Structure formats: structure tokens, C-alpha cells
Length: 125
Image (cartoon, rainbow, N blue to C red; front, side, top):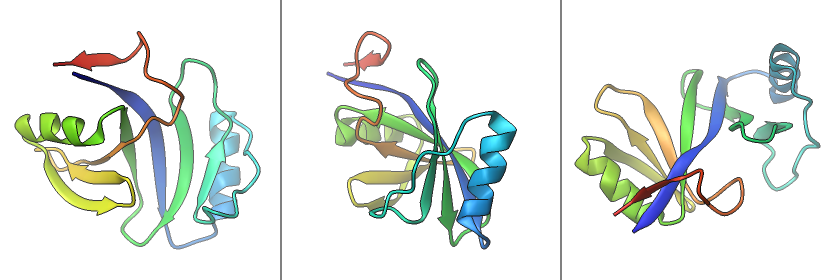
């Protein structure tokens, strides 16, 4: 048995200034930018709000798009569950998997990003 839930909305930005992109999305969504993290220079995180998904901006090499992150307390079990629904693995990066839905949208399965998965998460057997 494992748990999962929607974690993050990721705004992928190809080419361009990640700081400018962060400022734009901060203003557009009304969420202040958090301080840059030297360990992850291609990401800018917008301040989170309780009960809402995280929002971050990331610099990428592929075309700009928005993707979802699904957090799970068992990444391998969640990936297998999603494959059974028709998703396919694209690439493993560090501790997470980039996947593709049967309809072509990319998303990631990641370790918990917003703390432990409690009663607000889906429970899968």
C-alpha cells in the first residue's frame, strides 16, 4: 500500500532568463518568489499557500510547457500503478521519474515535497 497526491505545478521555460520568468509568474499568480537555492539554480519557487499545490518555474531545454508533479511515499509503486493505467516511463532523473500520459502530457512522480502524505492523499493498494 502507498499514498500519492498532486504536489506541484511546474512551469517549464525554454531559453530566457529564469529570474525574469520567476518575476512574471510571481506577479501573475500573486505568490512572492522565495530566495534562490544555490543547489538548484535552474529553479525558482513561488511562495506556497496552505492546502494548495506548490508552484515553481524551471529552466529547461525542451519546449516551454506546464507539467504536474505527483508526490508519493513509494515512487516505484506509484510509477507501476500509473503504468498499469497506460502511462509510460520517459526518463529517471535523480530520485524521480518523468512519465507520459496516454494522451501525451508529461508529468513527474517525485518523493514527498509538502511533508508527509496524510489523510489528504490518495491511498492505493
